[in-house]
Amino acid sequence: MVTLFPEVTDKAGVPRTLQVPFKMGRPCGDPFDFETRKQVVEALLGLTALPSGTRELYKDVPFLHGQ
Image 1 (tube, one colour):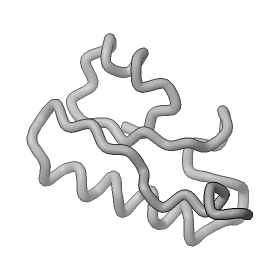
Image 2 (tube, rainbow, N blue to C red):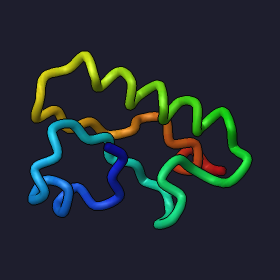
Image 3 (cartoon, rainbow, N blue to C red):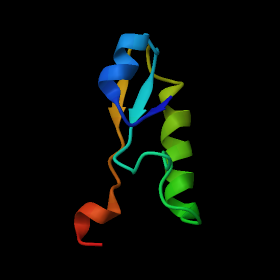
């Protein structure tokens, strides 16, 4: 599950989460930013191979690098 609020998701008992730093209403990034959306989906698919209880932080955050 993609989450913007990991503390809420943890309380809900979701087995695997990917915390993203995007704006509310845009859990996969900006509209028409297909490369970022693809990366988010690939990261989510990667979580399926990990054990239940896994919490990941989306690591490729372009706007933190001066965008």
